[in-house]
Length: 212
Ligand SMILES: NC(=O)c1ccc[n+]([C@@H]2O[C@H](COP(=O)([O-])OP(=O)(O)OC[C@H]3O[C@@H](n4cnc5c(N)ncnc54)[C@H](OP(=O)(O)O)[C@@H]3O)[C@@H](O)[C@H]2O)c1
Image 1 (spheres, rainbow, N blue to C red):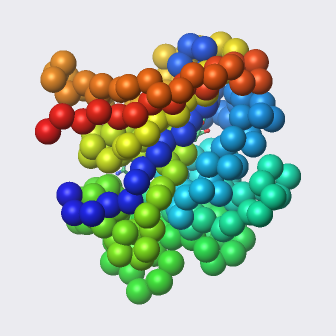
Image 2 (image 1 turned 135 degrees about the vertical axis):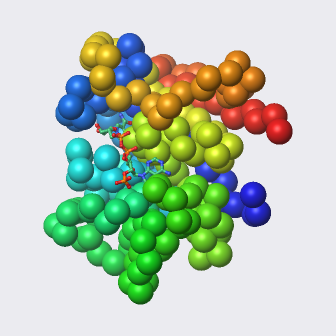
């Protein structure tokens, strides 16, 4: 991979490792201190990335709230949406500071084609974002998108907030879904860099160790 932005993943999961309920129903996993931390993280990056699954489930704004940050910036909001499924009235479209990463040709300057595969090619997306001056990215989910970043060896830091709740369900999404690893050699090793009680849960932060 050529030069790419620094990539941080942040996700909140239940004590049993789920990031939402079955059928992608949204659930509050963390509390106000963690929200503040997430908004500060957002304020320190050039772009926030989510998948279309998250937009369809939660319709997030992906902005930095003044309630949590004194001097809120406006990071670029990026949605991975190969087939342009994003609904017209999504909260992402409240201003023009967004980018839809697709796999179809487009003249729209708020859309970018990333590869010819069925899904957005992560190394190509990162290259294109880097060309646009993006140096730091926060990937907020969901599990499919995080899995693709992990498999592309494109995650530098991984933060997971573990909330004191059980969600359950074999089909409820987890932080890293996708197809999973088949060989032990493919497992991703982490180095714990921070652990901190927060709200009624625990924040864990890791550096990702990739071996080529
Ligand atoms: N607790 C948390 O911190 C947190 C954070 C975020 C989301 N969530 C939850 O996560 C759930 C959504 O997660 P999800 O896994 O279903 O969806 P997702 O990861 O948000 O989006 C997945 C979709 O993105 C598109 N995509 C395009 N390129 C991709 C690529 N290279 N790799 C992966 N996906 C790509 C695909 O749709 P196309 O093929 O149509 O493009 C794919 O189905 C929701 O329930 C949401 O509430 C929880």
